[in-house]
Image 1 (tube, rainbow over the protein chains, first blue to last red):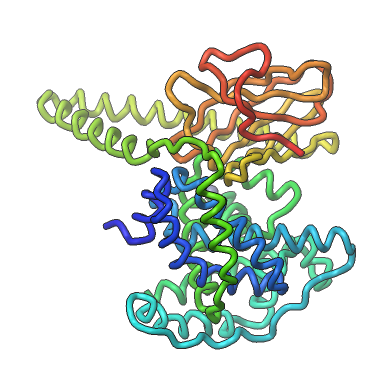
Image 2 (cartoon, each protein chain N blue to C red):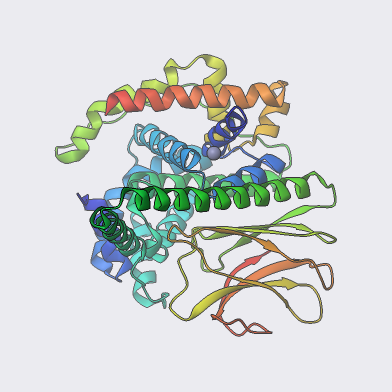
Length: 183
Length: 248
Ligand SMILES: [Zn+2]
């Protein structure tokens, strides 16, 4: 079965601008909060958002549904570009490391459709990260949201590299488990 | 096999974007060589992380982003869309498998089925051995402090990415991901930059999922960077086609 998102991407690959408009309307509100959370500045976040959708338009023919959902395709890209942005800032100011959020903001309610269906398990998934042991959650947040590499995390937490790797692996396994059970 | 557990850990660190140094190059070689369990683990991790991100509060993006994008796609020239071949290839492979199976069944000779199976296993083992040898050679290279890893990106902003693990004495390995297959009659060509002229460093094609890993021979001036262009399938002595990827 082809999802609406996949259908939009297929039409974008054929040069369909309307499909791109619909694709944007559907996915921009999903990826923007992640970008904002990572870069923390609204103007920067808007720049990154534009970059991410421009790449999606350019790269639509390279999308392969067998390798992931449109959501994962866009979120992975958005996260990468947002991290590129903060790493560039960090290189300029050497020691700057963004703080890590202590909690995730609650999801806002929204009107019907499949977005509402997604909202149901959103609560379960949002708390997934909170359910992790602190040590596992910390390394995943430092990596995924703050863009630190394993070596940087190891230095920052003063933990051996092997410990950092193991914590990331265990934490991620647990997250995958929660998501699997929620779907 | 116990040795694979290391890769499972690397796959997790890779999924959260935190892999660096030799681990990163080592894992990308492993992935480019086509390890299915790691590709699956990575896909599942990305889906899980995406679901996690979708749990965040909705935020309305500034309206001017959409209008800027719509204006941009309306005017900018865009690389001609090429239908993905992945779907077609899957279909072709499935058809071929059905035809092969039918041939085996109608042959009616049990022995020939075993022979075919044995032949296939021998081919798979030879391919596996070759894959391991390439992987070991790349790892060996990474242990040499004189080896560096050069990243190539697409100037058009596509998500195609390549890395060259390079050693001036021993040569190196090219690892490519997310590059669309070259059109009929064309191939990608790698160039070593830094001498008076770009030096041809090998022709390559990618598989249906946009990947390849291959050896790059040493020679010429020590390169300062690398680039990939799209060229006629037979290759050219000096670049003529568009630059698909380049190091910074
Ligand atoms: Zn593997």
